[in-house]
Image: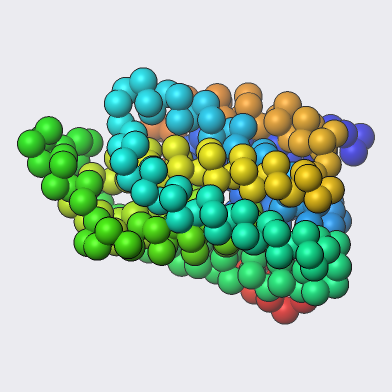
Length: 263
């Protein structure tokens, strides 16, 4: 019965990801901690690999349509990957299951969920339809950051946040890219964010696996449910009230974030 519950949880999160594009980490990690009672370090480590596998398919699909600006992905990853490795080294020294590590993870996860909820609510309330693409002549200018060091700096922040909490590569990453590349159409920003999340969550997830923070059996059960869930959600996306779903999810994430901070 418990096995079916994990598969169903994976399906539900996959369905929401397919419907809204919301990162699975912001949903799956608190679900594993609160509903299933999984230890924070195991929930975060397992969810990182869960995110890497679920976003890989989306990246391949986006790359085929030439929506991914690989220069942006590379610039951001140049900051996020080293920061992820540094965070993993610190976790290895402290011990991922130690009380200090658990306290840091739950508090930071709470803050990350509140930030994600705020970003989602802002997009749900004030978001407007964006142009699907940009003229080739303007694309080069649109992919220039305000300053060359900013993608590295913000990438490092995202890398540390994702490694410590499994949250941040979704809604927070999109907001960061919108600030760094204001002239770039939203579909391209989302595509770059998804593509960047794959190597980041894979490195962070494998790093967590190396220090014993991944439950492989649990990962298989979650993926067994999420892959069909994403497939179904992506086909229902045009017939669902996206704004209402995002608003409801933002309230749920804010509640989970506040609860984690209060632990």
